[in-house]
Amino acid sequence: TYCGYNYINGSGKMSKEVVVYSKPSCKNCTLLKMWLNSKEIDYNEVDVTQERSALSKIREAGYSSLPALEINGDFVEYGVYNDILDML
Image (tube, rainbow, N blue to C red; front, side, top):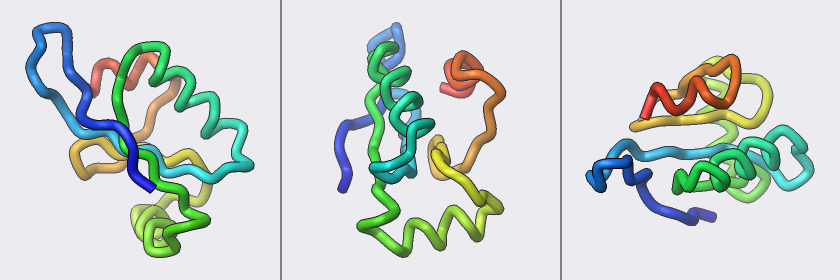
C-alpha cells in the first residue's frame, strides 16, 4: 500500500521520491517511519507482506533485512538516520 508523496525541501521545491520497504512486525521499520514523520519527510510505504514483488526487488538489490530505503529509484544505505537528510 502506498501513502504519502514526495519530500518537499525547505525551499518549497519538490525533491526526491522516498520509499520505505517494511513489514508490520518490523521494529526498525517503525522507528524509521517515525523518524521520517518527525522530520516531515513524506514517503511511500511498501508492505512486503502484501506485495511479494517488492520483496524480490529488495533482494535483487542485495538487501536481506528491513527496512530498505529507496530514494529516487535507488536503494541507499545509511549509518544513522540523519545521513538520509544529506541524500534528499
